[in-house]
Amino acid sequence: MTGKENGRVLLTATGMDLDDWLPPFAGRRDVVLEPDGNADPSIAYAVVWKQPPGILADLPNLKAVFSIGAGVDHVLADDTLPGDVPIVRVVNENLTQHMCEYVAWRVLDHHRRGQTYREQQQSRHWRGHAQPTSDEVTVGIMGFGALGNAVADNLVGLGFSVQGWSRSKRDHVRVICHNGVDGLDPFLTATDILVVLLPLTDQTAGIIDYQLMGKMKPDGPLGGPVLINAGRGGLQTEADILRALDDGTLHEASLDVFETEPLPAESPLWRHPRVFITPHAAAESDPRHLVPPMLDQMDAHDRGEPLKNLADRKAGY
Ligand code: NDP
Ligand code: OXD
Image 1 (cartoon, helix red, strand yellow):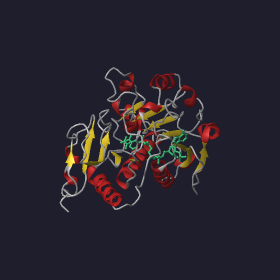
Image 2 (tube, rainbow, N blue to C red):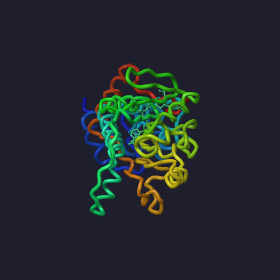
Image 3 (cartoon, rainbow, N blue to C red):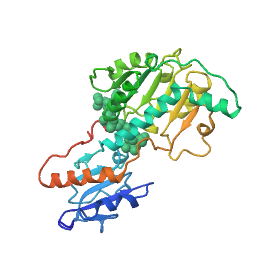
Image 4 (cartoon, rainbow, N blue to C red):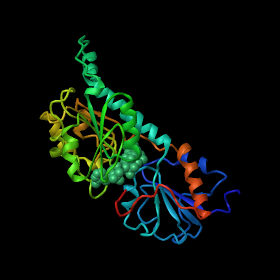
């Protein structure tokens, strides 16, 4: 096959450079960056990151939309999205590995007092601090799905005590699992480091607020609770994070995602001495690893096989 025989792929994104996404499609499917006219019949699949609203509205032969990320909030934000088209999200070893690395890096940096030692280095101050072992620290993973489970396995391997919180009941041999609204308080009160890996939905928007941070274990071995958010910025209230940091409710934070991205230059988070910022880079979507399985799924679907890793549109993730 040259790619001509198959339906074409619409590749569209906002705020992201697509140059690296084109080569992996070569020889398998033709890619277009814009539909030919309003009701382009040649497009069978769309691969999207924050698609321009309306671009998917009138494609008569659109069979599925592939999200460029694990989250699908950016796809569902488009009110004109056809109601019956399946949405495939990313569940991929490479992306998972990136997230495991990011979370291990941030957890270990807070655990090993990275910020304190960086400040001491600035003033050439030579002083060691008492160091708890990892099993004395409880990491609570909020959002215990594909990424949360892999991150948990990795942290268990590093010796941390790990808990998970999900919507439905989950089990894990080495992780204490909590779920639902009733499970949230017991999960939070035992947590020293909160790792947020939730999707952004109507239920989770704004969940990381002052009240929630105030429920975390106040007197743990790290000098206070730590927040790591690698889920979505819409999950957090940044004014509450600043308030919690400044009144001691929260000890430190690592934030990869923000209410507004890019994080505006005037945000006080940039300058806060106990906040570590990365620019939504915890787990980049690498086209070399993500496009081949997307193409395989498109071919399989054309042969009549069911799509894998479908988002539940009603649940919003
Ligand atoms: P999954 O869908 O596999 O897991 C989501 C988890 O969140 C599940 O455990 C789910 O519960 C839980 N959850 C959803 N809603 C609720 C709720 N209302 N209450 C309690 N738990 C809830 O997603 P992934 O693990 O693949 O990805 C998670 C998120 O990570 C993505 O949606 C995306 O926003 C973010 N992400 C960020 C990246 C970055 O670079 N910063 C990169 C990749 C992803 P249940 O198990 O019961 O379904
Ligand atoms: C994702 C992301 O959802 O990169 O995969 O944010």
